[in-house]
Image 1: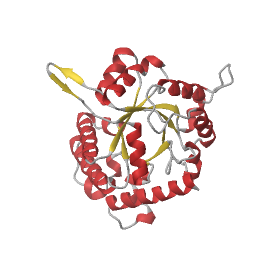
Image 2: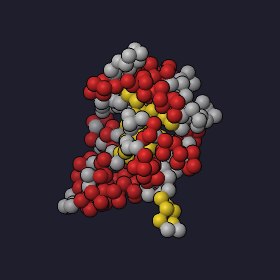
Image 3: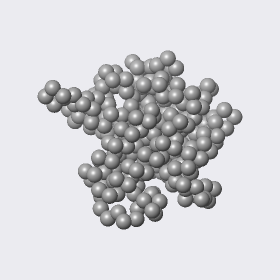
Image 4: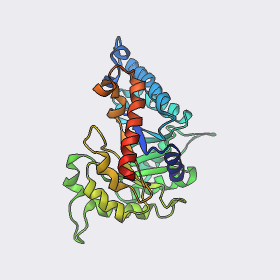
Length: 301
């Protein structure tokens, strides 16, 4: 799967993933008007997402659907999540589910089946939320990763494991020094490299990727050097404070090695002064084009 992602990034010359972290509050006023319950909010979110997908499907390689923004609307929200995933796949986009699943043994196996694999009920086999990639929390160790690796191999999927996250307080744990002088995030990086060693594609990157935040460029530079076969999913660009120049260190000398997420900066672009007067989907497309130019300037400068 990582080869497909790399090839699509290079074909479009755009290492951008659009984060569909779609809160009902992000929708234009006319789409929110008259909505009084969770079912209406979920329906409006799907309509919004479909227009975003249609607007960007030919210029970006992937979308990342953050499940928390759907779970908060209950059952109707999860239906909206499933519809969004299906819509994006039908549009030809690579779909990442951002769920940060974290458990062990049989429970991890259930999560893996839900997002990467298949569930059997009698003679029927189905994929509940069929995604190409899933974010995973690896801080429970190998027991929490192995079930995902198994389904990845069977169905040509991938995962992104949390290594150095973009939030300000990540250092409370991840920057702690171990007895060998390495930090916790570096040690997690070494585990990720090991977990992915059996599924390295033709471009030298593994189907087991890492989440590395754009807001921590010093640490990202260390990880890029220590994780030569690991592809990075890079949150933190734009509204959270990370810049294109910050995240340049995440890429290799060929301009490969990462894909950069932007959520609010694209979904809410129509509220920014620079896109004033544009419809939300038109503004989203223009924001993607501007992000592409900004990233390529920094990565290939």
